[in-house]
Length: 184
Image (cartoon, rainbow, N blue to C red; front, side, top):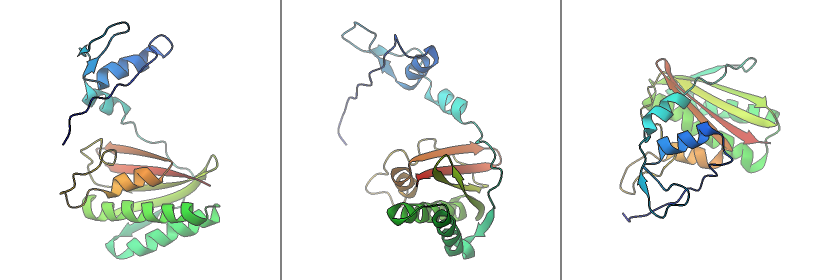
């Protein structure tokens, strides 16, 4: 409920041109180098940037799939935790994986068509959890900003973003895929 201004500094002389172009496309106003005041960005087009970077995630080779529905949500969480433990997660990191799995699979049941597929596998010293479902994701910033205080629900994906080391999402014609990484 308060007005705020945030300055995002970019090293335009050292960054690749595409990064600078993306910054202009995702910021409604810019302050050119040496200027004292902001001007409207003539390249502002955040929806185009989101669409450009909404690329399918690479396929997973050897991770077993665990299909789930509402009645198997608890089992899905246990499958993820057992696999995370086998892959070296312990303590809070293992609890974080279980919590993220519970949230993502529940979202699939509630918002993604009633079912989904869970996979967990090792990758570059981390444990990756993926949940796919048939839902159509419409808000590319969901989970990246807090829900309003009076809103009921809408905080689970934010929590996943806060406890995982990295979260990637792809929304396509055939559904939504969310992957999250946890350091061992």
